[in-house]
Length: 192
Image (cartoon, rainbow, N blue to C red):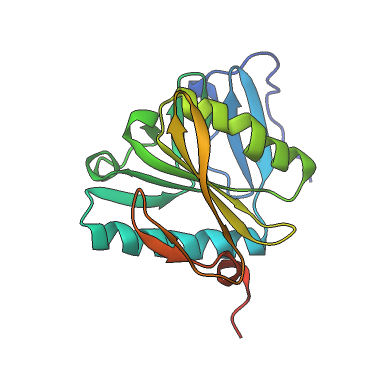
C-alpha cells in the first residue's frame, strides 16, 4: 500500500516541520533550514531514557526546584528545532503545555547517543554547539557503547566543558544542576 503525499523540496521552516505532526516512528528536527530525520530509538536507548528520567525527576523534586523533567520535547534554538531525549524545563513553561519550548526555559538537556554513525555525529558533534549558542547551561551525553557512560558538561565561555564522566559499574555523585547518584550500567541493564 502506498500513501500519497506532497513532496517538499528546498528549505524548511519551523512551522512546516511542526505542521508534519507527531510521529512516534521517527523524530524530525530542524538544523538551519535542513530537515533532520531519525528513526525511533531502540530498547536500550528507551530503557536508559526512562530510568534517567526517573532519577532526574526525583532529584528535581528533592531539590524543591521549580522545574519539570520531560522526554522528547521540541526545543526551539536560535537556528533550529531539536528534540532532546530528556530536558529539564522551568515548571511555569511546562504548565502551559506548549508544542515547543524556547531554549531560555531549558535548564538541562540530555542526549542519549544513537548507535548509528550518523546518530553519533549528530549527538556528539552537531547538537552541542547549537545548545551552547542557545545558552543552555547543562548538557549531559549518555553513551551506550562501548560501555554505558554519562558525560556531564557545563557551559563555560560559550562552549561545553566536561565536568565529570560517570562510568558503568560505579555509582557516581553528580552535584548539579540537581544532586543525584547514577550508575550508567544500571540504566541500561534489563531487569530480571
